[in-house]
Length: 310
Ligand code: BMA
Image 1 (tube, rainbow, N blue to C red):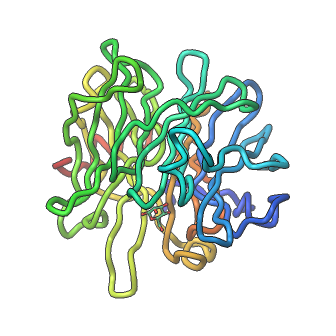
Image 2 (spheres, rainbow, N blue to C red):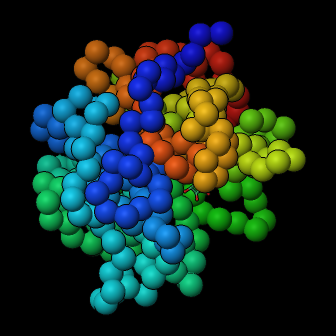
């Protein structure tokens, strides 16, 4: 069968050997267009096991060079310090109203929360607010306000229900509410254990295209794959269709083997004017990879090969 996501022939595109400061991994990166560049914000483990976020730049979306210093590290004092003590992870970036909104996981002895930062130029970055309590991960902000409100997909943890994708809205990016569950894992399916938002949603004429991750538990650990869903433009709480099939699973050696084996995990995708989309993913929590897909084909999978979202 033909691949839905065509892997770049020179994957992995970024590894720890490309980073000029000491790190053990390069993975789970956000990527966004900024002027004529692609900016990548990537997560790296330090030897402590805690993570920081670095920055890399590219003119073609494939060849990246890493900035000499990390971009975002845990604060040592101020309101964020108490919640970032164990590291900052898995950034997502959304361009909105002339600035870039960055969400990331803030780990501490209090659990995992999501923090929001912003930048205009990827030179200076301002941490704005912690926008969830514990325990949440995978918050992606839509690139437009919807009915006058900011909107996000997120993934709370639960001991009662399988970990699912929710939506929340905000008038000011600080206070979030009107939360609803939009999609849950499907039993005896490739994403049956848990799902979470991956890349920030992409606007298409047919709806918001969301690339998410789904996890399947096996006798030798969990397998992380990528799937797709299409949400209504004016009411993204409504899922028009979820593809019954995944679009990417761990197959390359650096996806099946590494720090955490059998993981492809996305935090960013860049739609291109020719109708393609570059999807970026961390391989085995160790390296960064990229591949290309056709947006119309992804939408068609959501519409014509769908399973119920809940
Ligand atoms: C998830 C997150 C991701 C990671 C994945 C696989 O729960 O921690 O950052 O890539 O597990 O280890």
